[in-house]
Length: 342
Image (cartoon, rainbow, N blue to C red; front, side, top):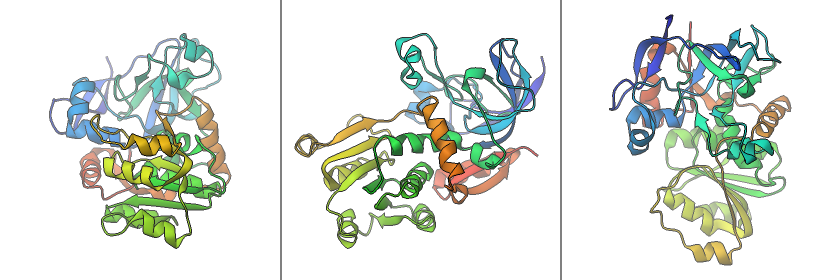
């Protein structure tokens, strides 16, 4: 069987390994994509660090990665709407296609979802196979590097557009790349004010560069910034940090009847004052992935109407230099990191 280079979780410990693995063999409903650019996700960092979630989730030996762009080089016999040579990226969640949610237009709620690079072999490789229903055809006016981060961009879009942000005061907790993209989306869609919080100096400076109001919560408070901007409670909250203190700060800062989208995962034992949620009439919505494919059309529309994600992409390395990327990710001194083939 033909071989290819890939980044794998070869051993059950901290690290990622560059290996020669079997090149994927496609089925009748699949396409084979020659990958040109990949982006490192926070999920990939969890796998690299081999934390408790990774230990309980990731098959040892699996090829990781799910953010990428590339070109179709082979198509299955049942594939239609795509051709060899098409530039594409893809939805990373594969679904059953036959359950009630899938059959009624809510594929993102399918209980049988599998994730590329998490449950099945991923895209940190020379080639990745994908069901053609998951493939998204790229347009030339959008840069390949931006297409390589469509997966996390989609998380930001789904989170932000779950509630109306036009003319609203928006609070984003967590200035990682997805949080910053969410703030940029809200600003692009004419939110009245967008405040983002963090404690990491690199991320704070990056958020400032894209024009967001930033609160370093290690030295100042959301309340003080809100008073400066005459904000009497936030209409929309976007929780991107996974930090229980940030989550509770958000609940404390919301206007009565405010709406909160929760993308980041909180620990099971996080303590929340439920009275503030009940008596504050707050609406909380959990976000998982992207709405297939409503979010994808929204992503492309946002970019075609002038949203510029290039500042979020801070580093590019050759594929073989992947360790440099994971080192930066571990320290938090980066935005999105791209790995590319020569």
